[in-house]
Length: 400
Ligand SMILES: Cc1cc2nc3c(=O)[nH]c(=O)nc-3n(C[C@H](O)[C@H](O)[C@H](O)COP(=O)(O)OP(=O)(O)OC[C@H]3O[C@@H](n4cnc5c(N)ncnc54)[C@H](O)[C@@H]3O)c2cc1C
Image (cartoon, rainbow, N blue to C red):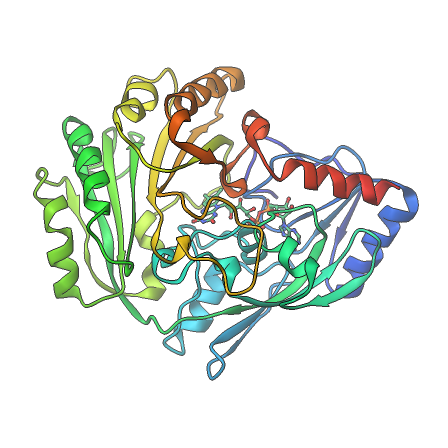
């Protein structure tokens, strides 16, 4: 079962791996038969479905082992973030996890990994200590700093091989000041403008984003049926200082809901409250040097868009902008914002969705540095996807 339901892999063979040997054997089989292979953990990032070939699923390889003294966790190929957050939290530590606890650690980290603590600690992939990977020729490698494969894997997203396990860094974050500020539709433009200005004033310990979200009728009051600006906050300093830092945002307008409070990091999934159920979606993104005018976000993909669009602006910079200690493949570290747009495909015409998303990207083109491979969902976004060549190349390599 894939989280993304708009597309399905249609492989000739599925290998539900329960060991590293299963992965190695599956990749060797694909190479011997001259057919493509791919790997699926949760299906959150399913974008280019297999037609024939070998699909390796990793759900059964879900181990996580925390070393509290070293401040690391060793994860297997199919481990999801919720397991790492819980295991690390027992030692007062936190991983560089993202908005959704159900996302796979390996797929997320290979794409760069933009997390809840990312302005303070950087890209998740910058904190990988070692990787075990089966390359398309079926060979298992243990790679660390200094190895070219180690550089290519981290940030490349996909297409380099099948990772069977990795060691990642953990951080001493037991509690955070975090949650959300929800503003009604009439305040969305003011909130966006204030948010963009506010980001220039905050320390690296403050990681945040703003989402423009059309909540479905079925969502609980007071959000159900409303178009809302949702500011998400994660601050690792003390709560009093957090309150002071967010005061300019609270001053913009009355909030429909204000959930900011001190909380254990193990509750951090409540900050974004991403839908945990599988669904169909298409999305794309732009890494921006700046955002002179946030108006197009509302004018093109706002409440009057021809289909539901969820727009998100992540504040980057801080540790995300620093060069990694060990070189990796994350590009455009100087971006100040990540602009994302995503639409459900519940019967909506994909071409119409792509047209609106393209119009939004065109409106910010002059400030666009590139795209993040992690936030391209569905074929609609494939044109801008830097990792596609690697993915295809890996399949070609597997097929030769
Ligand atoms: C609701 C949602 C929230 C998200 N939130 C964030 C976020 O906060 N921050 C962020 O950075 N990203 C986020 N993402 C993007 C996510 O990190 C990518 O979609 C990622 O590819 C998902 O990995 P997966 O293994 O869960 O998904 P899958 O669809 O199973 O895998 C996606 C691809 O990753 C590669 N991959 C997976 N496992 C392996 C492996 N063992 N070896 C080699 N390649 C592998 C494969 O190419 C595979 O096709 C989010 C996505 C969604 C849908």
